[in-house]
Image 1 (cartoon, one colour):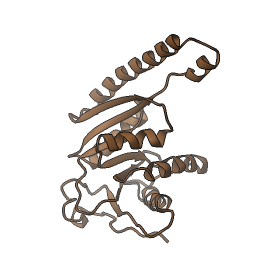
Image 2 (cartoon, rainbow, N blue to C red):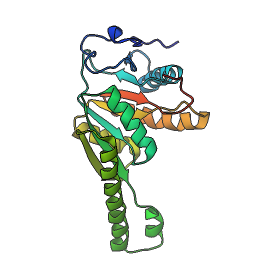
Image 3 (cartoon, rainbow, N blue to C red):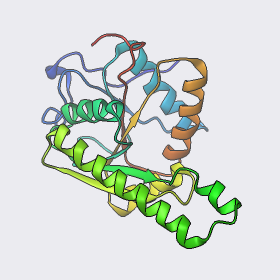
Length: 217
C-alpha cells in the first residue's frame, strides 16, 4: 500500500520553503528508499496520485526544502506538449525551463539501409533540425515564458540515456515528464521508459497529465 507524505490540498499545507513555488494545485511526495525496485515503486506512487487526483505531482528526491530552479522538459512541439509545458510553468512559476527535443530524421535508418550516401543522409538530418528549430521558436512564443531555453539534439542513444545525460550536463534539478492515466498499454510503455530515466538520474520529478482520465482538478 503506497503512502504519500504531502498531498497538498491548500497553500497552508505546503512544507516550509515550497510555499514559494507550489500552488494549491500540486501534490508533493517524498522519495522512498526502502523498496528494492526504487524507481518502479516511487513512479507507481506518483502515478496513482496523479490519476486519482488530477493535479501535477512533484516527486521530491532531495532533502526539503529544495526549490526547483531549472526544469528539463523532454518533449516535442505539438499542441499536447505545449499544454503540458503550460501546466508545468504554472506548477513551477519561478523555475527556468529547458525544452529538450530529440531529433531524428524520418526514414533515416531506411536511407542508410538502402545505401544512400552519408551526405544525403546528413542533409535529411539537417533539414529535420531546421524544421524543429522553427517549431521551437513558435512554441516559445505561444508559451509566453521568458525563461525557456530550447535544446535540439540528434537522438543517437536510447531516449532515457539521452535525457539523463542532458539533465546532468545542464544540472537540472527537476525533470518534467508526462504520466499516463489512459489505457493499460500506454501506461506500461510510458512506465518502462520513465523507470529507465529515473534509474539514471537523481533530480526531482514533476509528473503531470492532460488526459481526461485523470480526476478533475
